[in-house]
Image 1: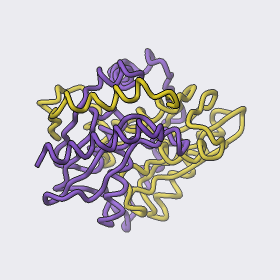
Image 2 (image 1 turned 120 degrees about the vertical axis):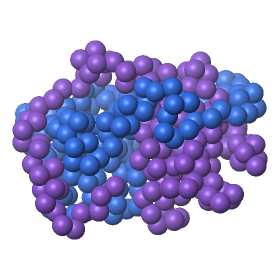
Image 3 (image 1 turned 60 degrees about the horizontal axis):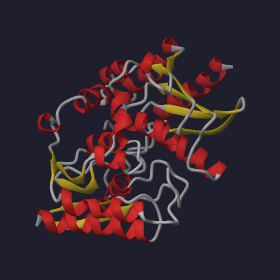
Image 4 (image 1 turned 90 degrees about the vertical axis):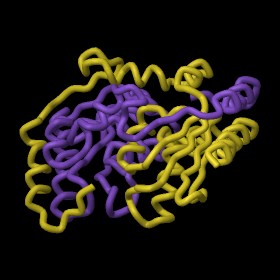
Length: 155
Length: 155
């Protein structure tokens, strides 16, 4: 069954590349042995740098299930998720991820996956895109309000 | 000016927490000294685990500019971007990021930011959400098609 689902993710990726609709990436989400959502990369066709296949599949699955977590679900991605998608996998609390190609292969094909993995492990001050803290004291107010909000929905 | 933009990001975060619309996070995107997009976290209200303030602000800015990159733009986030958002910042090719609270403070408030940073630096085999490679050979087909696609839009 694993290969069946991965074959579908790869098919989505190949078709996307053939039609030049976006990057050569596809993903499906599986729950209880059935595909509940699938997507292909649409970064360039939708002007959305976050529209990676994994992100769209996660968002579609959540819309379908009407919940903001995907416990008990598995992701099949035609290529190893980039740090953005890996973060989304954790926030969605997926059970497991299967991937086809590696981040190194994606980088060889011209995508920045490996670079971003390297950047995350750098100190903020040494990253290519600088990250600078300002107004740390004032920003804490948001967490103080959150802490005392009786109607909050934690995630 | 930096404080002006950060104050707006914090205001979005505080208001979001007050109204219990989502996590206590806000973000704005600035280009040429003016805010072109802003957003607050809507993970729980929209059933979308990817709907962090930074992600939504990036997506809104790209829709407005009708482009899939944000070169020359800066992000102001009320809290340090999580790995998902950091990935999106690189894909969007933002110029610089300013943040208020730290990932450690977000974690203290109950959010998984620090955990996800730790997980990314772990070996795949030691991560809490397993990542397993299958069908690596077959998956390479997507990159081979991409390589020979004359109409592709690289990103």
